Length: 130
Image 1: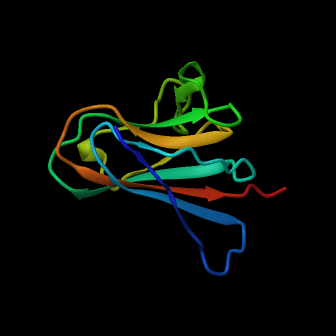
Image 2 (image 1 turned 90 degrees about the horizontal axis):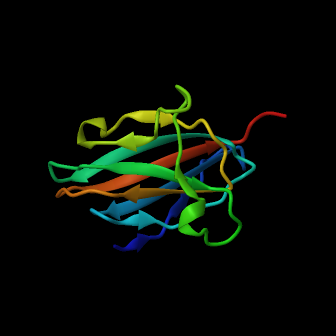
């Protein structure tokens, strides 16, 4: 298992209202490093299939911990359909967007299956209007 570092993409003309975070080159059993963007509680996630033909399980995890969370403080987040609708993906979900429900302190992608795919994960964080 490798931990992949995120890439921050600035969105011209949006100052700090939008944050785009990407993890690229994710392979089976890889995880992304933790990202904390608490002031941007509204987020959507897209899985991008870069190559390959199979992917068993991939999820978006969150934690309320400050610093590196212990395993007991990590959970799979839910999508906007409500609790019980985990933010998990399979190969057929490539390209689809899911909107997150919870607003964790930290967030990351996690592969937990077998397959031959290389993928990227894009999370677009939007600052909620006050």
